Image 1: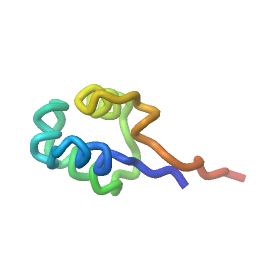
Image 2: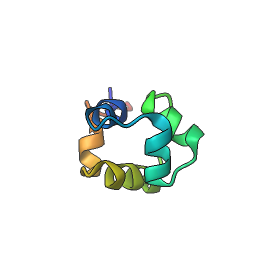
Image 3: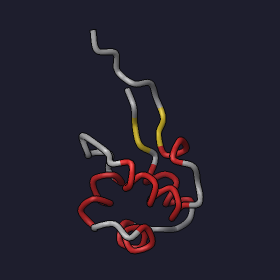
Image 4: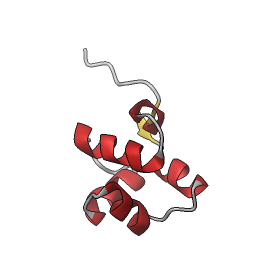
Length: 70
């Protein structure tokens, strides 16, 4: 299962949801869902903005294996 690591990466930089939201220029609700990994879909733009704000690659935001659709 694929999982986002936004919270872990942000907390290493002493960022909270509000600060990350402003830094990434994303809506608080979007950042909150990505922080808590409750978003069912992610936009490429949101992940690009988060990665840039955190100084990481988009690939660093995600862990796990995608689910297989049979």
